[in-house]
Length: 216
Image (cartoon, rainbow, N blue to C red):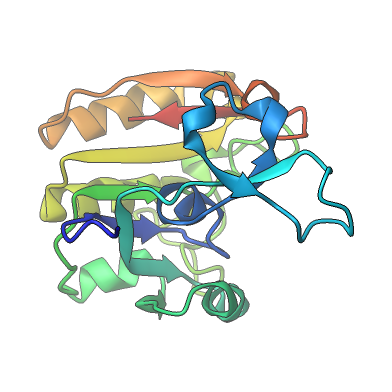
């Protein structure tokens, strides 16, 4: 039975909806990655031609996505191929905030703000990124790709959800100027008790050696 009062999720930096899937979808995972079998809905028979492939479909949780946002039109197209209902806005979140966009009410705000400027694979400019917030305009000091987390903070301030969940790369913790400290401070200033933890995703069923920082 569908819960008549699902928790509403507002998604930022949505991309094709991977993080959203973890909240409101029915992900297909290998059964060995699930410690609590009560999370399992049924066996998956679509991944291969056999019914003994070990993959399962997880139960749908009590969340519904009410807003999605990214600058990539192609990401919206993929998202909508996998989600019958969407409220996907293809525009920089910085511009939406500047134009006083009216965000829907939400219980949870989620998103993986841009990681390129913190990643070990990039130039690691951090907050001093030389990329604009929309990758098009001339550089301005208050709206670079490396400071887009501030737009996440501002959305949280305006929407006032019960909780927010942000995700980023391990490199966020290894930058010499410790950007994680400033990010945590900025979230705290809008009224939240904030914690972060480094997660090794391979310990949670993801078949990759991938470390991610989760901020809640």
